[in-house]
Length: 264
Length: 264
Image (tube, one colour):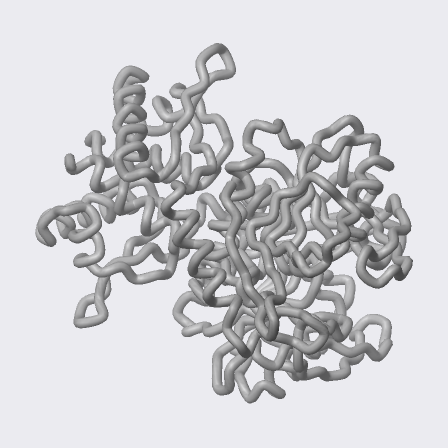
């Protein structure tokens, strides 16, 4: 097989499984080429990623070493994405009575949610995340794509107790904006003890739901190491959580809703 | 830029946006190379995909022509995937009282759900799908990945009427297995008139929920052109729907639950 074919084949595998480490042996056997040739192929792919600002290929040395694609969006790409999203979300017809914004369609378009998930994964890549957790419904797609780029499972908490989840652990939580009491449930087998969890949600108002997820993770004797949300409603000044990363901020200014992107 | 770098760069773009057509001009400008060179690069990528049975690169001729990656899993890859899934799903500890099976973790692992979504997309690729529709909760990840490979938006029906969806259209439906009456809701702006919809769901028992989604699509004056489910419970003989594609069949045999993959 020619070099440019091998380069393509290796790149496809790395891209199909971001965050997963592949050994040189794996490619050497699969593509029937010497390890030294594979090594040179990887140098080419690294160069390509650098030159086109596509991200970074990481080489891990040692016995369990190999090569993987790290989640990465260049600053330029992130800015372009957030500018476009801000513009789309500020369209007049998205305002819903009660100070709401219609944004479900954004989170239901794979190309947007892939980019957003990669951004979140990029930010938390070095935090040794074991699980991404979200709660039904609208945050699921963003959670999935974040989990994809971190190469970990997604866990979805439910607002109802479903038979098909088997044994569950549940907590009660207070909505930060309305003060209402609700419950959330998570399958007992979904999270092992002593793990590191990243919480991802679509919308942050008072923070009660996320506070609830944090309590839920604690019941699993695991640890929340980060919180990321798609949109932070800044009209709600008092939040029940402190450290979090919001991709977009939303704010009512006079008669308009302003949406603005945040850096990483 | 050298050929093998260009090949990698083109491949990355095509893979990032499956089902989307990119013109030769696009690559020519972006990579600062002659269209004839880009054309040769694409021939190399086509060869690579063919040689490694990775899928197919389609070239569309004419004014709006270009090149794209079609969703594709080889028969061998599909068989391997379904065999692995059957084995995993038949583990004893997945059985839940009431004849249920715990499978949420499968649909919450990106690498599984990407492969499954690509399989569904492959089967319905030539049906000119405009939207993939699902209903909360567990089918959302599969719906998203199917929509990704078909390059169309996902639409998620809800079991409750939420303020944040804005104006909704709703229908009532009867559960095929329990006979209970429920409602489902979908944002009015989510589906335009006269479109072609593929319904994706995680589990098929009596088929009442899918029947409901079909009625809902009709209220949008659109058309259901296909139905795909992850698991078909064959214990429930009488179904409220007829034509559908199930990735896996599940059946109680004596004291055991058998799970078996279907072809495309």
